[in-house]
Image 1 (cartoon, rainbow, N blue to C red):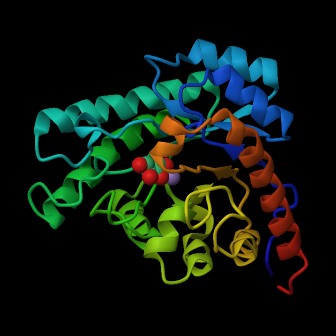
Image 2: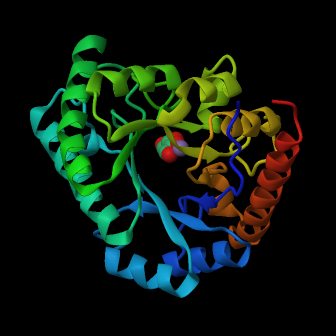
Length: 284
Ligand code: LER
Ligand code: MN
């Protein structure tokens, strides 16, 4: 018998609000009825104290911490031992940050972004990722924070492209503090069946990034969200429904970004609620 997720909670990763103060992004999300905010993992420019002031002022919860830039020194499987050590230290610092802001989850991807080839070999880089994340997972377990492994599409990483691969890495790490997450933009490129991939993650799915096929707001591309919501309801998903859209860079550099921030946030929560309700009406 399927478990129904009765009251979905909505969140939003602030990455598309480029150049905007965190407090202003949070105020927008609160105004449009979001419950949470996904916080960039960048404590040196956005300290926990500032996040906490904003959370109190807006009534939002921190739904997760998402690393902001995955450069070479945040690469948990790097061939260079020094870079790997820096990456482990960075993710450990994010666990402390998550505790300070009350976020239940830290998102983890095991390579730098756009590293589309192994440093040593697929097996050896994988082994290093498992080793590094296992170390971070010990801190996570002690702190009561979860790690969610995020697959990206093939143009951003060679290692985890599909949920099934993230789940295999989770099992090899073998820590109760490690789960997986799903990002619809990447899944639209890499998965055969998005809803089936979500179902396969079952209780280990800890976070989800909604965007449409073109990484604009849900409703602007061709992903059918109803089967996705149905799959989430069937696995009894009880974590945040978060959104992460990322329009092309030129929109930020030659357009007027604030003009689309409000409409995109409103459209996202409206479309997600409609799809969620439509899925509830389907047969189990
Ligand atoms: C981060 O959540 C993500 O989805 C990646 O595409 C970042 O490069
Ligand atoms: Mn994502």
